[in-house]
Length: 149
Image (cartoon, rainbow, N blue to C red):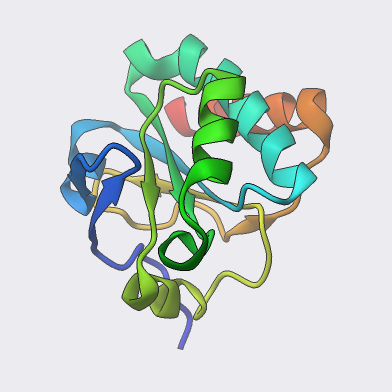
């Protein structure tokens, strides 16, 4: 039973703003990064996605971070730190326990990047790990260019 679509959600960012999976409909394509604040490769991928977001946000491409830190237990300082240090402007929402259980069905490690269309359908299978900042930027650029064709 291969999952081919993001499970729907209504989750909050660290400032309490609610974001739902309807956000996918506002863009031709969304790159989702599933990350945790304590893992270096996640930070590298987010840093690369910041570059991608700045370059493509006006061309129908969004970036969405989904944080899988256990914020309920440990608080959100780590998450807030990463977002502020990197200066991330794209939305980052915090997975609650129920959504974590949904993600476990197809996310094996962090970071996992998932590229979806307007309907939240996977355009590519989930990609695990970082290729370093430059490598990640190149990888996402080539995916976007390919998709635009």
